[in-house]
Amino acid sequence: MRVALDTNILAYAEGLGDRARCAAAADLISTLPVDRVILPAQTLGELYRVLVAKAGRTPDVARQALLSWADSFEVADSTWPAFQSAFDCAADHSMQIWDALILAVAAENRCRLLISEDLQDGFIWRGVTVVDPFHGRHMHLVETAINK
Image 1 (cartoon, rainbow, N blue to C red):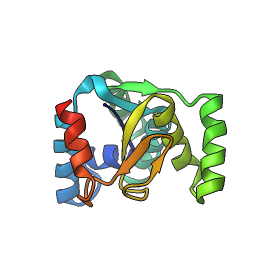
Image 2: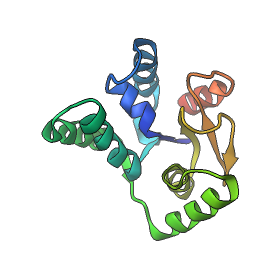
Image 3: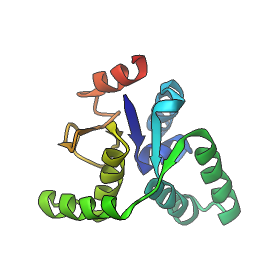
Image 4: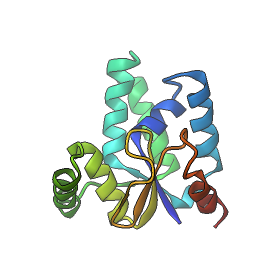
């Protein structure tokens, strides 16, 4: 089962946020099979902005962090068909376009889960289920992804 990671999970793994969430995100990522994890390119762009604007890291340090993520996991580009799907998702579900794009890229890349704190836990769109790893209600799906 393929899994996509949202920006907030990467930001926590980078140490931005409360200690418990940072540790939980890092632990979760370390348990996921590398060959099943997708990083939508949009998440890396957002992470760069967070690292520089909010965390105060230099652009060079932020770039190195992004390259490290890209070296660790497959990065999935935002295609025109993904954008078209994202427009529909955003319009139909009152979602922010950039969140919808991440979800659309996950669907386009045959992910079954999008691990995100920002979207509605349990929301399903085009076969992708959003799982909030800090909510716990759907964490059994992540455990299934780890063990398959």
